Length: 452
Image (cartoon, rainbow, N blue to C red; front, side, top):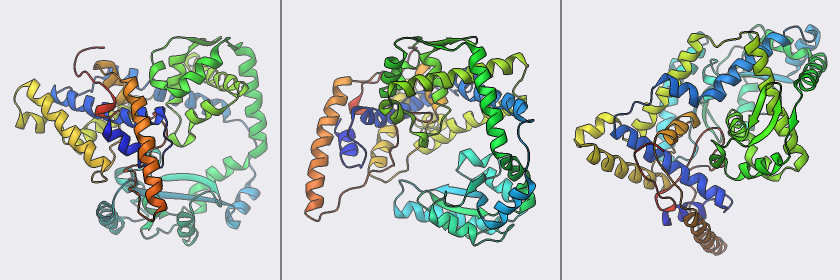
């Protein structure tokens, strides 16, 4: 509890119980990863991975169908597209990013050395492959680092200034932003012409899309149930508690839409969407619309299934591979690989204790800014929590908030007196949305082992 109270109290994050639980979830995920490693559990069962990644798979399938039905929408405007490109109203960029958020100066220097070495090898011909191999921007790495099109003024100043200084086809030196170190390539007009023409369809696409969605909603017979708003609002405070909840939120021709289904769809949204904050703060009318919008996803998915749209085996294999890689990466960074544990401890019990000690040590160093934050993807967290027991001490979290408030107050007083305040080790965003869960030793009681 003291560890979590100190972390929260010395951060700039709001001192709230949900934030405390968010940090606490990190510890739980780390400990369960260590327990799996101690038992040599590879966590690579394809069926379990598919079940854990159903939101990503469903989203991919729905997007494929949407691309099919939207191909005929809109009219291209070649003149407008080229004018916007040449005037700089619309920009495009590819990048390779190595993250430095939450790192100290020594760690950042190590990252800088690494990206300098990458820059020395990058050429226009191999940029996409180098991005796929090296970039830590997971959302763009698989597409060769492409950030797509964006209006001028939408990127952070350092990034945009470096991009505009490039001629089409050129690659930048290493530049630094609040996110980390970037290598930027500015595409040529021919390379992004297709995207520009697609974007030029503008209003005609919007009209066609609105018509499609209105018809989908009308024919889908969506009915949001009484009490759905209260359930969604409660979910916003603690999504983990509703991960397996089958409360009926709405019905449609696609079937029943439950709370657990909504939690899954929410996990497909990026952390920066801050959807849980929006849920907590939105009026009832917007929460009703939120439910309706995700039911539309279900209706699109039903159309995709009816049209026999499938995920390519290669795409599914890539999803599985990324999952397995995430497991091994986390094990390695936390120093709890099955091999390292078995080399030092022979019995399962001893390996469990060793893994737990190493996780505790890593977590402590992370809090002290001596080790980077290790993300645990949501599907991996889901599998761990499905297979192994864990629990939260609710009263302990209340005490964490009380102690963190005292620490924050003391720190504020110290700052007023001209004394520096210790920084939080990693940028806390939202309590576990689509990406990582959390929990520290003293704020929760965790039982390792066994089926829930």
